[in-house]
Image 1 (cartoon, rainbow, N blue to C red):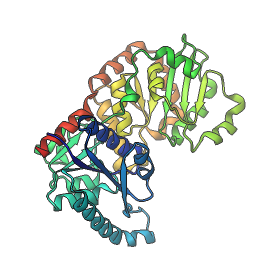
Image 2 (image 1 turned 135 degrees about the horizontal axis):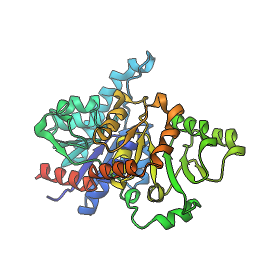
Image 3 (image 1 turned 120 degrees about the vertical axis):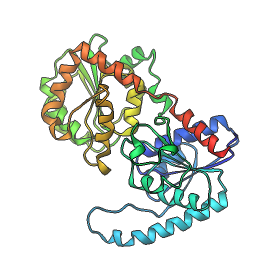
Image 4 (image 1 turned 180 degrees about the vertical axis):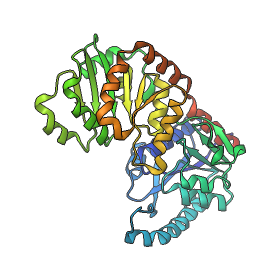
Length: 365
């Protein structure tokens, strides 16, 4: 079924934005003449990232509920109503065949307006634990594309389609790139490599874990350490004189495909898209879920792998003491590392984006 006009809505973090862009790219690949419009939240990351990806975006004045008592919470009902009215107006003007919500503040009003206008609609739920907005909208939308089993406890079973999460193709194509990666990061081909990634902004716990154990990292191990732009300068000042040559401290890894290609082990947070990428690349993984996320969903994402013997988990509270020690033990345990790599590959869904677009086509048809 040809897709001619589509709206994608959501954002707030890269974990919502990048899947939405991946879906948009796949729709456009299959339907070159398609008109695609994004709806985001004013002042959020998507207002910058979506135009960079080549798509038009309209912002809603929606904000989230603050956990502490603030004046902005009193304004929230008015912003929700204003956002609903604006979303309804955009839908009437644009006339989409389908609306896709990927999570984040803007997807709530947009999907609600779409269901009220009886426009076919799809939720793409990235996490193992469903967000509040998606749970509220689940009975009204046509289909819900998920990446984890067991979401029948949140959504109607007959609406769930197991697709996996969209991943950025350029990130996970690692075959035959090891030599290029060694040169790119200036690494020794005879040493094992650990990749430490805490997201583009960084993860304080992973950084403190590294700093606490710098002197214990043996010379026959090398580390690519993405510390994040929030922490880079501070860490440089703190450890510049004692940073060994075998540790490559980086603010941000631009060529994540090369980092994945050369890594013998990955230490990461457990955001849904990161986890989906890690399943596809198939390396031994230690996950350190962030405790600072809604409904502790990163722990639930991580446990979905741990329960299948596909990853190890170190709690955030224990990481500074135990993470690097456990990482080095696992690096030297070839049998355990091999088992983790084999098990995580079994959970990969490399065709997720195409399967989501097929689901979208089916509800239009």
